[in-house]
Image (cartoon, rainbow, N blue to C red; front, side, top):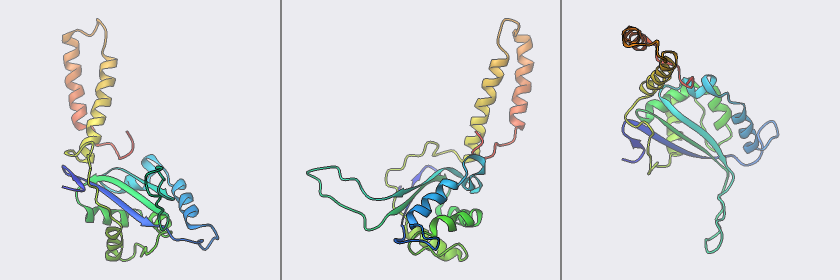
Length: 200
């Protein structure tokens, strides 16, 4: 099914960017680029607070490239903001999580786009985002069957296992010494908290 790979959803949005300048006098596309460049990465990213986000990115598209003859030369009627994301679950709950989890950033970003209604009205916000959606027709998720918490726990288990192996090598680690250590490691692994998004 389009937009879905297992339980994962692939979202593609194309939002036309306003022509002209914003109140500060900067062209909208330049102010938008500045806002995106100021967005923190890693655990401080606002998207890290939107539950279920495996990955996401924004890109400003100025125009379509001309591949050369014999192709026809085409141009976009405006610049576009591209947003792509892979997340757990369904579209509407994810859009609501974005609206409530990062409203200030959404205003800074989509305030430069044509027709953006803001985040105050959940219905208007959802309708705007859905109107910008392009079908993700060839979506292959890296972890289509696994939710973000499951992926984070698996990556954490891998990291911990590598550290355990590195610290328990050599001829002194005979079976009778290694077995109880490994059993303790398994208990610690089971009790370990799920890592926060964007920390691994």
